[in-house]
Length: 138
Image (tube, rainbow, N blue to C red; front, top):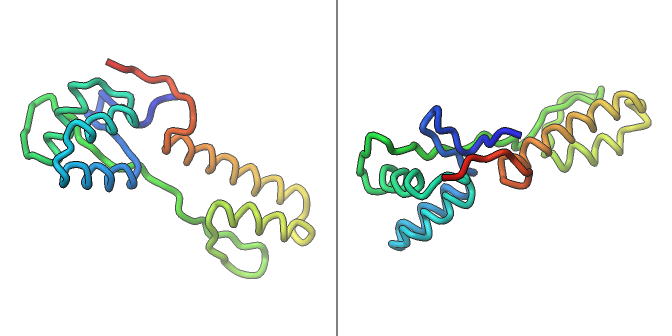
């Protein structure tokens, strides 16, 4: 699997919104080394990339080689119609509601929706570092 978090071709380090908040707190508390370590752990980038990215985002130091720190897209909910109108559901609720409605939507449609759920859950897991990925570490 490709590492979506370390993108040297775009000079970008992508992290979850929770990590961005955590970086903000660490830098506000003057814990630059901890912020760099957190960024390296999540993105698997090198020390130089993490240090320059943190300095660029929080200190205004603009090294020409500095990476940007950007958030990853995240699926918060999905809108689905089980035949009675649109319903907005979280991923966990999608799975539960699909199983609850299995008798009315049929086994094949249930299978298709659960496959979609699994794909989105896997994608979210990769975004949050829960999947093994091919990484380039410096």
